[in-house]
Image (tube, rainbow, N blue to C red):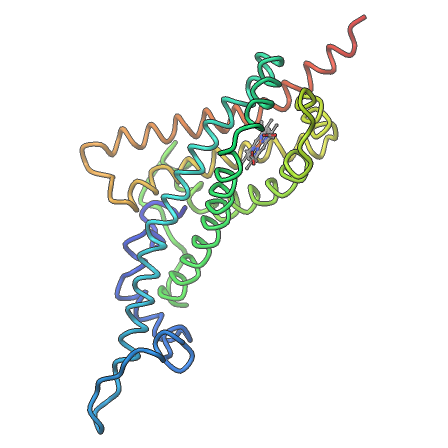
Length: 278
Ligand code: HEM
């Protein structure tokens, strides 16, 4: 998800500047583009053969507008997953038996694997498309463009603007965390009844605990600007609902960020207190 009001927003993805910049991209070169090369060229002999280039331009613009809605939609799908995930994993603290039962029931569901595949697609698509769009926007802005400046000022506005600038870094941190997290808990799925034990083993090292804490903070930062940015990109942001969406995003960012950061610490603390008990 890109920063609000930044040129990385959805509408800029198909702006004249961006389209002009892609003219220098090999993707728009008919000789290098199989779609463009195979498009029928109806120009009479002697006139410029513009058909292939026009087809290539259409492909580029269509690709850009697909990215413009796929980035926010995949982001919102991931937010929905995080809300459900937090509800599930907080049972590990609040109701350990319920947590084990939920995991056992979940792992037997036939729809789990298709759902995991859809989640994996969103997890791959979201950062990949955001990266491509950011590169194409940078190219469109050109070397003369100065650093982006926020039009927001003070307090939470400044924090949200900062979160927008840091979005690629918080996203990258989450990707690194996910590689570790999935290797720990998904690659070798624990046996029924051993989910909490596996989770505590995953959190055992200070490095791992630190990474979980940082990942929670990254979720909060990413959401602080991403929630509003996604609504803007999808054209859902209007003067009438702007403040509501902004504050809902902030509340979500604070809740998910704090809970994902503190839950691992609380789990480890409780386990060591229990181990210390006679
Ligand atoms: C408090 C922090 C977290 C805890 C305690 C936690 C715990 C877990 C556990 C126990 C599983 C295994 C679930 C199963 O066996 O079905 C899991 C899976 C997963 N977690 Fe987390 N998680 C945390 C944070 C996160 C965050 C921040 C993300 C995303 C950025 C995330 C993404 C995932 C994904 C994608 C899976 C695989 C889901 C599946 O394929 O079923 N987790 N997590």
